Length: 208
Image 1 (cartoon, rainbow, N blue to C red):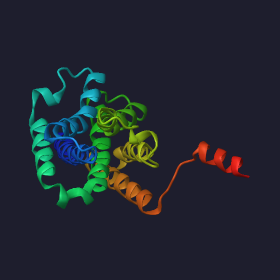
Image 2: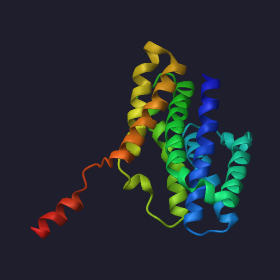
Image 3: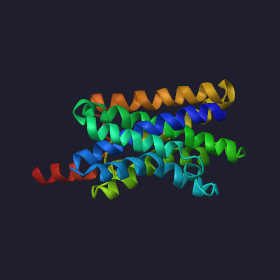
Image 4: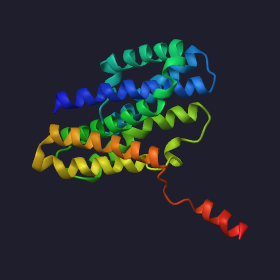
């Protein structure tokens, strides 16, 4: 399980580092601001997860590989953004899926007696925590609060991982959950799937 966790942790770190750097570019920040957003997006959710699990200091401060990868990713994006802009949604989705898995795996490893709620919630916190920090630092509403089928995709992936872990084993269930979150997010982006928005219904009533 440790190997599976490491694979998804690194994939999520790179993907979210890219998306954080992309937001910094969009906000016209300099290379330092881009790097800060990149690092906080990549490791912020994991740090929150570790603190909640009593893992102190957080793993990123004890093994700085994720921090180094985040900084390198930010520099690559900052100096090569014309070629990389179109990859924002891809990287953000990969990060969401990968950190959903690592958060759930952390719960399985640290607290094996908790089967559903804790793994799903740690998966969600790890997946969206860094993005929330990124958006707050960029002075914009966190995308998790308005982007449709974003947090829901993480929750669904965590539930699927919990359901498949016993019959299929943790590694296979992790990859299936990762692929499921990717597919769900890409389908939501392509088909513009939306959750219920009360204000949209209110505006239609006003027009009528």
